[in-house]
Image 1: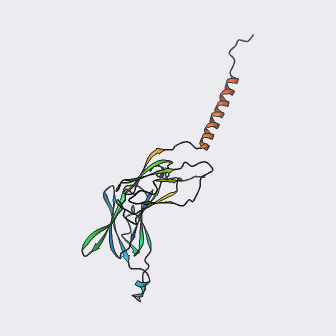
Image 2: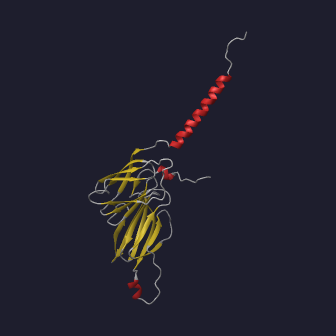
Length: 249
């Protein structure tokens, strides 16, 4: 069986909520109806612009008009790498999920126009109260987790997968970023288990590998020992077949 594995997932070790990649997703809630202009940058170079129209939703809005109301989703998924579409629609109180399908270094800013003035309401480089960061950390080891805005810290341990003990479909671990700290100060997860950071204060979350745990698995060790044993048998057999070098009478 051939498995198509994206090697980039294993190459990306460190996480930065202000520099989005395939390993990170940020979520922002839009409470106020209106038109929002969004700008996407990759490594500080603007790569795309689009709009989000947030419409009044719920039963009260429908009662005010007898005309059929267009469907307004409660959530939209926006790939920052894409160049289209130019317009998304969302109902008030809904969520925009910003993600990246490939590459890294992405950020998004959102502005709301009001009385001819544009006000910034969201910036993925500085998450605010209610914003959410979802991160996937695969490589086993110990990581430092830092909110670079208020310098609070935590330790993250990604367990090494033991042969035959790997657990699947694990729920994500939820962590709150507050003025006092990041969660309880220590986080422990299994590889591929999601991390969800809910921000209660301005936050930019960086996860950096401090001590990798790159020991070979028991299966790999067994294969190495088997190859060594097989090679040893060949050497012994070859030695036995070699002439003794003595003179025959």
